[in-house]
Image (cartoon, rainbow, N blue to C red; front, side, top):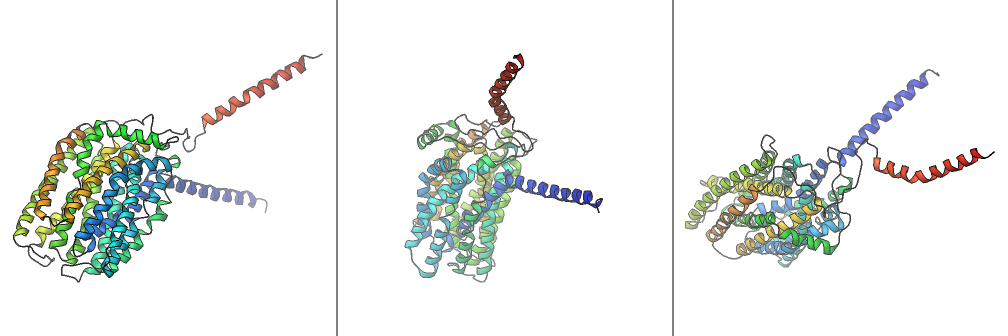
Length: 494
């Protein structure tokens, strides 16, 4: 009986060791950069991903695009200032809580589209656009800073692709639901109201997911180091930092592409609403998500292609994207000239459907590819999460400027060929500026700015905290010295 006790103790110790080992691995994954990017991707999946799915239907699934375009103009109008403020707020309250605030407004917008679709009221759509604008400002600034600032440098292309790819999966899911609910409707018009109920339920799940994000100080990279964080900042310091950032050459060169890079998306939404049936639009909302994910993943992998230096990757991929997008604009112009002569109503059984449909799908591929590229480029400018929060907030404010004016022009009854020519011209205009920015991408990463983040001296997993040990020893030196003196005096007495 006594002999069995050591065996039982050894078995118990072995089981305890395995349990603690598994627990440690789960904890390391939970605090790792990959899990944080997955969380950000899932939050984007639930909120802007579903928002994109609704817009992928063309004009939010409505029969006429004008009200939804006006609402989107309000949303992006708020974000012109909101995204810059969102970057500042992220540094004040923390990226996690900024992300949480960013999940609150999206369901209201989708609910407003539901009430408009079913009951015909318009005012709630405009209210929903306001709530969405404030929430999106916080989410846009915080999610990009997390996706760029948390990962290791050599993984940023892939991790940005994971973040944007998961967000695109929201559009794939929303598109699949749209297609299942509207596959029998071969006429042009608005989608069924049951579509909105499913999408609203999905968006409400974004809040609990955002609460699972780890703050920067608790995140561990593969090498055991922590992510930099700001410990001391004020509203005044943040405002000065944003103003300083705005005057840097690398930011000024990227402003034009952020203003006009997504301008064509509003034209594409109007184009798809006007010329395609409900079920064709539902199919399109599904396939643009798949196409966008492919663009994110392929571009992200190319941006992390190790045999090429980072500067070479920046140049080659930018040239490829310019050639692709210019080709699509030329194709789209030919389609629009044809449709202006006689406006079609295209279903997937109609001749000529493939010509008009394919360019819309490929546009999503190019749009997501350029977004992945631009975020990766932002990640090469600075390293600290504080500066990245300001940078992403600032540049996304300028992106909102472009989106606002694009939706304003699309909310009018301006001819589609005119909106197309405007977007095409603006894209050509920004090419020289972004090309210079691509040529300035450094081969080696920037170090953290001195006024950005203050790293805590946190030991790696499995290592002792030498700094804390040395401070304890230093604090004990005086008592030890005093004890030695007392002992020596006692021994010297007769």
